[in-house]
Amino acid sequence: MAQEIMQVSPLPPYMMKALQEADYIVHDHTHIKDPGALSKVTALIGTGSAKVDKKLLTMLPNLKLVAICGVGYDGVDVTACKEKGIVVTHTPGVLTDDVADLAMGLVLSIGRRIPQADKFVRNGDWVDDEFPLLQKVSGTRIGIVGMGRIGRAIAKRAAAFDMHIAYTSRDAKADVPYAFYDSPTLLAAEVDYLVVAVPGGDETKHMIGSSVLQAMGSKAYLINIARGSVVDQPVLVQALKDKHIAGAALDVFWDEPAIDPELRRLNNVVLTPHIASATVETRHAMAALTMENLQAFYEGKSLPSPVPECSALCDLAAVATTTAAPAA
Ligand code: NAP
Image 1 (cartoon, rainbow, N blue to C red):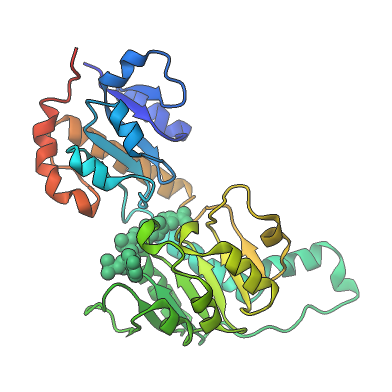
Image 2: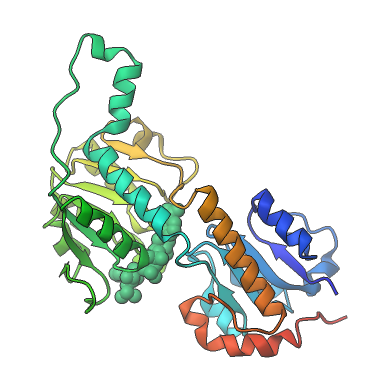
């Protein structure tokens, strides 16, 4: 029997195709034509931007799985899911290289003003002028906020640029050789590039605010490839306007995709449209892992990648499959 699932964010065409080929009936949460369908939905599927709150969970009495195609799941109320025995899965690991690649690309882009230099050539400014000299990137100090999968991959790349690596995380890691600082503010005072790689959500909201930006000082750059919520964006915009920090390179924003015009007007920023994992290879690998989680769930097998908070619930997932067929 075909399983009925619901998409809670737009999905790419190759993923819709895979779902259809695997015989899933996919409802769209923005266009529910038959209210009776809600009780037939046993899994939700969405990207890292998906919002799954208590209100939505209450509408879906037979929901057992939330499969996120992305590593970040800060839009999902995991506590409420766990209370209802609903397992949440995500796609860690498969996007780590891409995100770390973009982080280093942003370090180089803002440090050497690559987009600004490109504009300088295109505008014909080179004919009458010289592009200004900048600071060397190799051999500088990089601070990583969040020494997880992506943080470690950034450190590996930074080492190839002879950068001095330090980090902060909730605790020091015994298996990395880098200097540990107890807080983002202490770390910020010691680095030229501060790269944010923590998850979004309440715990990290505005972790990068005025005290961190003040500690960075006028020669340091902020790079954010994590989530817009981690940075207090109005405070950052003011710090950039006042040149309290040297610049910022941002892939994520609290108001994406309609970014604050003040931020867009600044010259000391590089802005990318949340593309850190956006390569063909990685997006297909993320989709494949999401499909594996769905399939394992419906076959009663252990789930390949539950979020850490749900690991203990995974055994229940196998049990839940027996009840996955919705009530009539
Ligand atoms: P991860 O392996 O779970 O690493 C997250 C790190 O953040 C861990 O080291 C963790 O510390 C640390 N951390 C968590 N809460 C913290 C807190 N309150 N204070 C200090 N450190 C904290 O996750 P990942 O795979 O590296 O991914 C990190 C994040 O990158 C994702 O959650 C997602 O939001 C973002 N991301 C963005 C894009 C994009 O397109 N821009 C793409 C992929 C991922 P502990 O080790 O102590 O737990």
